[in-house]
Image (cartoon, rainbow, N blue to C red):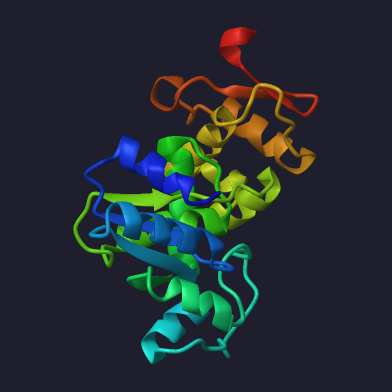
Length: 231
């Protein structure tokens, strides 16, 4: 189950001091927290929630399970909720040290960062942990951010993580990098939505694109992406 992530973390990063994970229903962070309490109890466990749905942060502040009256829907739909269930509160409270609340813009930036630096395409809920780690609120590290959630298609990823849109990439180096790395993160057989195909062709045809800076381009033909190196 989810608790096996703790074993993997300790194997790869035995000096870990903090683990951050998004909170939806609470199963992931409860399992992680329980495993670390048993194996390395000094590791601090932090949850992450969007500002639009942060019942766990409210519950921790008030010391009891709460309903989040300000709940509003957002693209971070895999985390946060309207309330914390009393049964889950009983399980989370002993193993969670705190909860960090993120703005939607902080979450967007984390999504872009994951695509640009790690070539990981994460949904909003998956990027929450990275956004939380970047705030510094979890304290000194080493910090491990659990990126759990990639349930997002390319069109939505572009809309959520690149608010100016792909067409703006010709005018913005950072957005161009994100667009290029978005494609290089895909499998060779990946299908690219028709809505983005024309814009991507425009990016790759632009003199702004520098392969030596961003890596090999993935060209678009018939909705399929593949690298120039394999043409």
